[in-house]
Length: 212
Image (cartoon, rainbow, N blue to C red; front, side, top):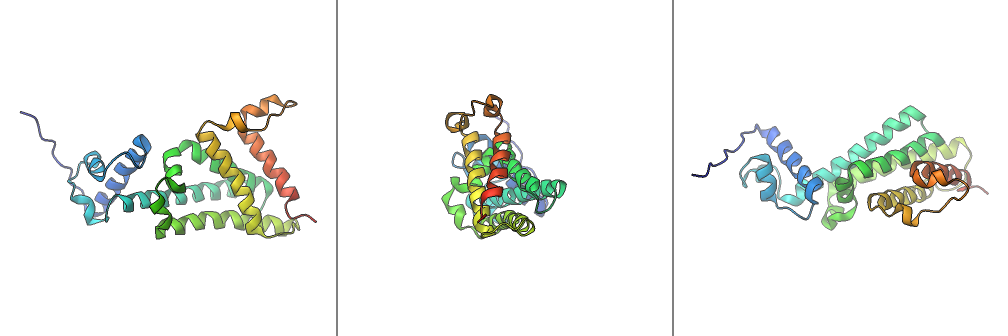
């Protein structure tokens, strides 16, 4: 006879975390759209009724994962800024590099954070943590601009820098970077090092944006 797998017993708070961990595991392995809530229950070892003690459904768990992704990205940004210096060009460059590194390491979660599931764009927690993440970038750019007498709106400057960094990250995770990245004949080694290109772009951009 086929052996029936026993369900795992969790304490109240542990069940919620187990469901989030199981769902994230499936997001990373299959993509957010390629599994059901019942699949996540099987990975967590719980009944299909268990999630409804904490969540309304799969989308709410995905929203929690996306929200935590923004928190993690913000924490990484704050860490590198603390190391390189608040409101410094090196700190801003390090934030950009940390962003790309996060996209490459946590690709499935990164895609989830930025629109793989359209309904998440309206989720309150996702909007809140996403905005907090971007506010950190704005604050660093604003401090740099103030210290270096760079004219212009800090939010607009930060948005332009973020647009470049996000684009570079997206190209890298789709393995399209080499196909569309600028070719530097005088420095061929840079073609293989997007971090160098990112740093040089941000350094040049920070020196130009908002200047008279």
